Length: 396
Ligand code: DI6
Ligand code: FE
Image (cartoon, rainbow, N blue to C red):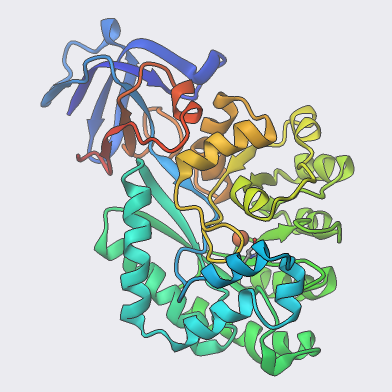
């Protein structure tokens, strides 16, 4: 297929957005075969031609941090917070993550799937082609496996790539209260082995926080991941500075996520280890956090910044990656170009993917075609979806 009459945000080269004003693309066998100015389109290029009438083409978007599969919702907790309770108060009172654990344990596979599909469809309608989905609301072996099987199933039911993440170290379940290490030994690590043996795990995550796991405990999970040859990432420095980012960097983590309380030293360590900073403005917004992630330090050290929804029922019931881009600009002062790189190229890197996230020959033909003239418009509007069409694997 040949696409002409396109404004291309290739995100390659040194120009802003890698912009090509009157561009063309040749797609073949699910990949981008050629990309450049229409005037340079190879004469022998063959295929069905589509004139895009000047529309903007970007790489399809990538949501690199989500908890899209989960049971129930937490509208009541939302209400409690508005009556004055903090996230930590609610967690310590057995609410928060644990109420979603109960709902997820009780849900059947098909109930989880039926709840997840509309969330996935909403992302797909925004031109998203890759979604990362975490476990972590089971905290027992069977439910962790159930969540990951449902996540895998999503990719069979929709034209979407799903990257699965084992997040057994998300919270300490009530039956192991005060015995986090026993939970890791008896449940989390065996669950990881079984999930890996079933081919259900692409990467391993943890929650390093006062209300969750210490760096030493996370290191046990990372050691197990390393033994299985799985890449790691970490929810780090979200509510306090515990040293999770430094630990993640020691393990060569793909990403450190949230990172509001990360320091300049953390940013330097991330640059060294090639770890992506995944910014989650939905959680920052929903928790009314005031501690800003160290954006200037990330820029100074050239730490790639990704932007994701963190779509979860507690701290980020945000089902729009476009809105996450807007929030990253307004709250964290990212530029619209940084926000777009954050949901394409840098999001791909946060998932260890090198075959998507830019418009370049040899990469997957996963594209978003937008009814806008300039890429800044994608981050500028609040709550409006300008997608015209999505191309996945070279097909509309
Ligand atoms: N950090 C978060 O923001 C979510 N998980 C995590 O580790 C919150 C999960 C929840 O409250 O359900
Ligand atoms: Fe999260």
